Amino acid sequence: MRARLIAGLVVLLAVSCAAVGVAAVYELNGFLTGRLDQQLQDVGARYPASLEHGPLKPSDHDGDEQHGDTRKQSAGTFGARLVGGAVTDAAFVPSGTATADKNVPLTATEKNALADVPIDGHGHTLCISSLGDYRVMAAKGLDGDVLITGLPMEPVEAAVHRLELVAACVFGVTLAVAGVAGALWVRWSLRPLNRVAATATRVSELPLASGEVALPPRAPESHPRSEVGRVAAAFNRMLGHIEDALTKRHASEERLRSFAADASHELRTPVASVRGHAELALLHPGPVPPQVTRALERITAESARMGEMVDDLLLLARLDAGRPLERLPVDLTHLVLDSVTDARAAGPDHRWTLELAEEPVTVTGDAHRLQQVLANLLANARLHTPVGTKVTVSLRADDGKAVLTVHDDGPGVPRDVQPGVFERFTRADRRRTEGAGGGAGLGLSIVAAVVEAHSGTVTLDSRPGATTFTVRIPATP
Image (cartoon, rainbow, N blue to C red; front, side, top):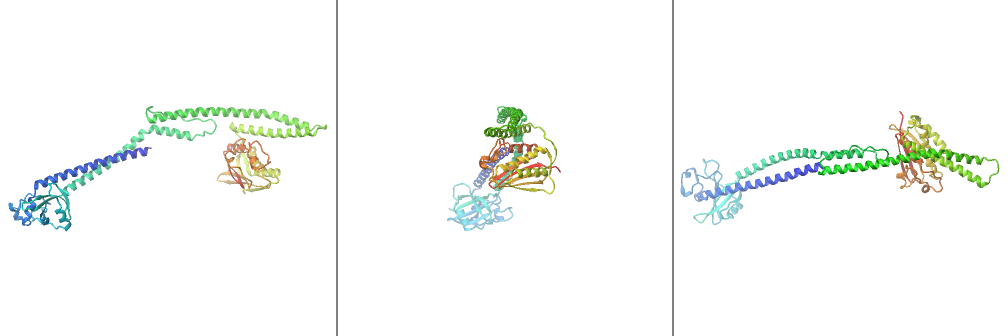
């Protein structure tokens, strides 16, 4: 906007200067040409009348009135005599008075142009190739001939060109000064808007997705009736509404997080109690009906599943609360070997492949939580792909980071599920494989939360026949 304002100011000033310059040049040219016409009227036809007997010699300038008075003719005065529409004589007064008048060679076109000069008492511009531009005026002679007197346009053109040069220099300097002054003025005038833009930039750089957000100080408001003042006031009101909304959202998240943590903590005991009583009932030595045995087995399995879900919810609540994890050196290569061994035992129908670096890859973090990340990724690949799927686990160090990838050649994650695959309670197992056992949709959300707690990232790249989860965690040198 600053550039457009300055450009508009300079363009308007340039147009104004151009209009003033054109008007001044036009008026000066008209004024000087009018003065030249007045001189032609004052001079009359005395000089071309003297050409009837040929150009005068220096001795003829001493008052020979039969040839006309040429002693007062200025240098450059042109004269021509036409008889019957044809030029008979043409001469001009050279610079200085020591030489005789000089004949002027005329082309046929110039002779025709002289013959076409109207006898109207007005000046007309004519170009003579050997002399330049002339202002000529025609009058009738006493012998029925036509006498044409001309004065050079060179003084007029020189004055006009000088005015053009002066105007161009003055207007150029004026435009340069006006451009600099306008830039400073616009910059000073837009300072309140720059402060609003700076505040908006700071707000745009804040992480507003979750957590408690502290908005920067409000933008300073200028005059309330100015455009910038109204923008600043509206922007500050918007920041106030955003801050209220973020505060309420954060309070709601805190209540929900507290509820999830408390509920998970309180549910662990009754779930464990239910599972223990079911297992105790299964150990009863007496005869138990098959239906009761089946019910007790289902109660045991579901209570175990519920216990795992409660543990996952409790872990997520703790991670959301920002509770610190252990920060110890962890041999990630050893964890990968153990995790793949467990996964091969749990899914013998899959093909498991390992690609490890020659040197052990070490990170600083919580070994138990990193083990859970590996277990969840491998379980996800095992449970949501058909039998015979090849799963490749690779680990390497790259640019100061430990890079872990879990790749499978299964059907892939549906496109509509991929954007929220790391969100909680996201389940796509029914659409990936029929009859596959599904969890609560917390596995990948735990992966994302644990990796983020280790200052790392996890990404998904999936298409039919190629699904890759990539985890990057800062490595320990």
